[in-house]
Amino acid sequence: TMSSCLVGQSYGNGFYYLIDSNGTIAASRAANKAFDLDPSTYYESPALFSAGHGTYRGAAATPLDDSSSYFGEYIEVELPSKLVVRAVDITPHSDYDATAPTRWALLGSNDGVTFQTISNTSTTWTSASTVSTTIDATAAFTVFRFACSGVGDASTPSASPRKLRLSELVFYGYEVIN
Image 1 (spheres, helix red, strand yellow):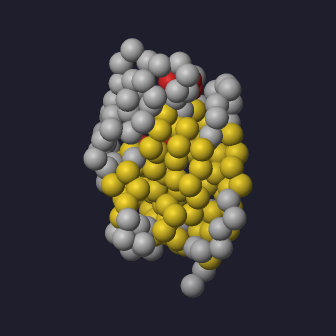
Image 2 (cartoon, one colour):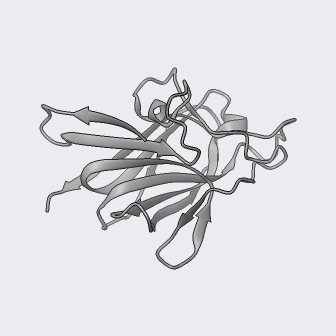
């Protein structure tokens, strides 16, 4: 798990923990690259998406509160306080047609073990521009997983297995103080 500490701000002070479904913490393409506000860097998953249609072929599963599971590569962030997420901005890598998230879910938890689905979404990409998705959520969580079960444009098959690549991932919402 990778961590960083934020202090001296009007809100959000504390430790933030990041990990991806493969435990990548020291690589140049690790989970923190999706949150560094630098569009020239990016998170990259292993090549676990099919070449043809970009469907997830790996084994990463997130247990859901209804006893089912969401299968897909994920980036998990644990916040120092609860947040109600109202929107997500996703900025794909420049090769968006092969690596941008087309089927994804935002999942929330307060114990880091069992998750609730906040949003289960499909996105069509026409460029590497940021896409904002509004979320109608009311529940507050400290742990969030951005989980992806499909990447790339299925109409432009790739010659080799695909990867998920994210330049930026930004959550918008409000903090809940208990």
